[in-house]
Amino acid sequence: MEGPKDLKEVVLEIAKKAKSASKTLTSLSSGVKNEVLKRVAQKIRENREELKKVNEKDVNQALLQGHTKAFIDRLTLSDKVIEAMAKGLEEVAQLPDPVGEVVKMWKRPNGLMVGRMRIPLGVIAIIYESRPNVTIDAAGLCFKSGNAVILRGGKEALNSNLALADLFRQTLKEFNLPEDAVQVIPTPDRTAMEYMLELEEYIDLVIPRGGEGLIRFVTEKARMPVIKHYKGVCHVYVDEEANLEMAKTIAINAKCQRPGVCNAMETLLVHEKIAPKFLPDLAEEYKKYGVELRGCPETLKLIPWAKPATEEDWYAEYLDLILAVKVVKDIDEAIEHISKYGSNHTEAIVTENYSKAMKFIKEVDASLVLVNASTRFNDGGELGLGAEIGISTTKIHAYGPMGLEELTTTKFIAFGNGQIRT
Image (cartoon, rainbow, N blue to C red; front, side, top):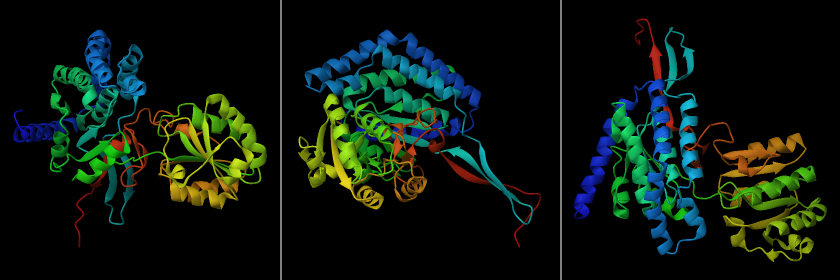
């Protein structure tokens, strides 16, 4: 690749090959797809030490560049991560194949039987950052759902991504299937990503996974549909009719179990009638976890050591042990706050009142709305999808965790016995 023109041609060739490969995948049997996935899992285990050596190059380079401990952790292919990738593929192999499923059928007055059948989307491009395990997770889900995939990972994980994709490609070749069903953009050059985002003729969907900056960049540049998930500003509202012990357990879990993920709670809303009893006790629990609280004026009266919350705090996705807290007068104010500051990701209410629970479910706009449960459940595995490729906060096509079904669409089919239109 000597210059931009050459790079553009390389990206175009990758997209063309993916489009061609996708046509073969459409007609693959579930049995063949499952055997491929199990064989890739086997190869990952067999090549564990080689994968760790390749990954070590990426990790050492990232250390030299001064990346954070959390970044290095996401980048590292440990034995645990490698085994999780292999098991993940085996789990996907066990899931029902959505392709070809007739999801609905009805009879017209003229006797014509009309239905909808699930079909692959075609070619999916996935742009992600420093987690090489996404290479296998995404390739496995796309393959099972009959889609070819173009993977563009972060530059820090390029060696690892190429090595993992190569194992998948080797397996496809063993089964006499087009290895170009799984491809990695082989350069960290950002221009390659820009070229790829212009190729709507060959790429049917783009899924960016990463920070808000990456997702906004992709959304602005892409000529094809984009599944967006800008950030997760998730709320828990504790109603006056909540079981306070339950509410405390949920509030601790939602914030502290894993604070650096998109489904962690970022703002706690508490009804004014139970705030004096609930918040001081909860605050002492948060102290044990090292949580920094940023509260509204009413919160500060009840928790003197909390910091005053600013307007920016209500919009913030901290991804850290920091929590914004607001006392509200009722459920309507809680819903209004979520409507203004939420990100359509995950919202929860804790209440024993059925009517309020249903009001919250109906009026709150989020990809998952929970009653009496932690926001941490917005995850494909936890919701029974088996696996996910990301969480969509885009309402068109998919909303929430994207499993195998969300990587398909439906087409109309019709069965007749000679009907003609008059």
